[in-house]
Image (cartoon, rainbow, N blue to C red; front, side, top):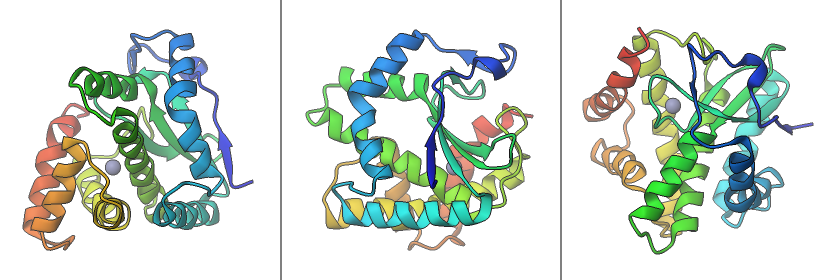
Length: 226
Ligand SMILES: [Zn+2]
């Protein structure tokens, strides 16, 4: 099986000293998933997503993840990352050595309600594309890197920056680029910032413009880990 949907609760592994609890109840998080995310995540998994480039990319990345790790689980995580409540997703290994893509539900919901409060006209679509970009970004990590560290034991700063520099380059080129250039999809300010910088860096992963941008973006979060 190429894909498994993980449990929405992480209670067994929950350590209040490491992970900040959600302000939303489990019921509210489950309902949010049902109302705002289930439909497009399922289409992605079933390879019936409306944008062909995204289907192809997803299929390619999942194939590579399965080749490397045997299985991919998408887990809905019900606590924040303590380093930053704006981290929406993560990539790691399960206890059995298979790959795990985490969706951080409280942070994702915060992002949705912030977008709603600022009165976006195409809220659901904007949100959908933000999550799709997030999922593809985590898959870019899992499919192309040796996964080091876990959620509670992340890799050191230099390793983290190198990984983000490469993974965001792939996400900008193979996910955001077709979304914007071929389908005219609007982006959140954060995703726009990544893509705009990627263009300014001449789409070159070795560019100092690109490396500086990633460093500035991740330094605060990364420093809190040490
Ligand atoms: Zn990343």
